[in-house]
Image (cartoon, rainbow, N blue to C red; front, side, top):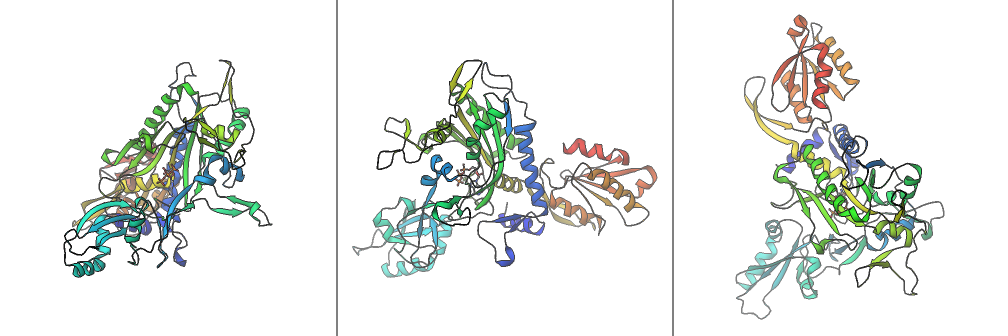
Length: 540
Ligand code: ATP
């Protein structure tokens, strides 16, 4: 699938617009248009319904209640700054970045590729050993530096070989001196990689001093941890149970790119699932598989969706298991996958951090309080008791946490990519034409059905409007009487509308309408009185 075609359809049909476009846009920020807002809301609603309100799955823990409980929260975006100090985000939520001193372009050190070129047979002792920089595919990077390459080959009159492939962050000092900036072509003019905290800083209150600094949350999870006790005390939930939250998160990404995939403002759908330490491994495996099933049930499947277990060395210092659900987005190179969701076994790290203070792993691999130069805890926790007492087992413990953390925008983008389809169909004049159809699952389709009168006369618009009004009480539907009916079908195909209902001449005789299926193009007749139930039975 050609990504450019999808991007253009998203703008043309109102799925996605660049934020502040009339002022030239703002990098890393996106607005959802009239169709996009419905699609994303349907995805978030499906997640909430399947994971929280309608979930009816059995517990995996022997001896636990037959089904586990799920509940929700909606926390603030700005929280007490101590939250981020204890969670580790204040010190550790950083990417390494580099700047070109010449053209001032900024790059993430782990995304910037360095292609190593050598003139192996050159007689000169200082035969160049050049590092071309870039952020795309190998061929694109070489293309970008073609001019410089020609010059080098002319000067040295020798063969070039590609000898290495690494990221800027992996280069040693010698390599960094040889690196060529992908933007301006200057050699050896990059700053040393330095840490860049991804949290957006803001000021709370009118004083405006450093003491009033606060942060926009980079994840929704922490709001759940700090409310753990409130939820246990105010409801009757018993472990094992989960708390879900959907909301905006903010990360000052160094290089936002790939449409909405890496944005600076985005929405997350997160669950923190609290369980007994003895059963946490079982629950980790349960959530990993449950979440994978959710995407496949809504239409992501085949080779493009994978579940990838992290290797030992990829795990965070507190995690004893993490898996990513990944999708082969069309803007990635063949064989590459982008993360849709991470499912992490976080042990008791988060609740302990908010009780005791910022934790680090010691040499024996145990979590201990991080101390400052004065030997005192670097960041003090809340001091509150966030342990859990199981009255039936008469046991008190710090629950372990399994965290399925999904991105609503990345899920929306994956569903859009998966849905985009082209086929050849005859137009109104019988000529073959390319039809663009968004094959979205009916549950997430922005518009569930469109209602058309075949022509604007003989009472057809009145009947069609009546059907439209009846359907509108239950679903998001669309009414259209303008232009040839074939064109109206095409517009709905592009919007991903699964069903079109047409009032025609026969309706006036027998009170039936045509229902057309977006994907199979099959048409059948239904009584006007049964249309609402017909659509309800199909869109769920
Ligand atoms: P990445 O490695 O791609 O930066 P991450 O591992 O930092 O992602 P998490 O912190 O695990 O991501 O966040 C959970 C989910 O939130 C991700 O799987 C993704 O769907 C979403 N997400 C994270 N960062 C962004 C972003 N900048 N733009 C859009 N969605 C994001």
